[in-house]
Length: 144
Image 1: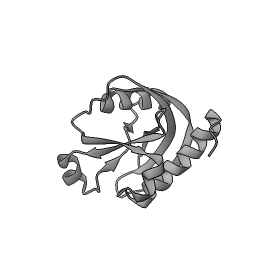
Image 2: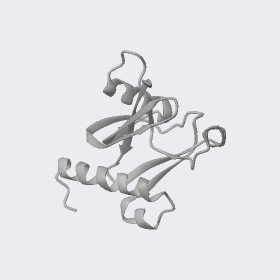
Image 3: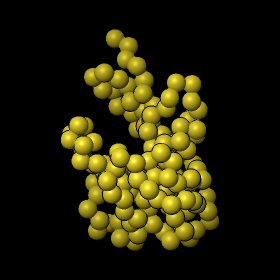
């Protein structure tokens, strides 16, 4: 049986102070989706919407920020009961604007990268951040 595709673009955003932005989904979102609640800004593409446009739109809607995309950092797919989910996560930087969350999220954290190991986020999320940072640092010429 063919399942519809759902494509999602997410932003792993770094700032000039070596911090990464992590969001917490609202209680309503966490309960509705039975999820841990940690998230990066982003979301699904609209019909006929280019991937980069969707990423920019979703980041703006969820955070009020504009970002510069550095490069793709992680691709994940999962065949679910009702759809084939494809998530593309991008290393991003240069956040501009005032951070203001949409109703989808209730809190944000700017996490210092040197404190990532001790932070209470899921290990898969930490690994995605590390991978995105390696790409970001290489692109920006940052010594690691």
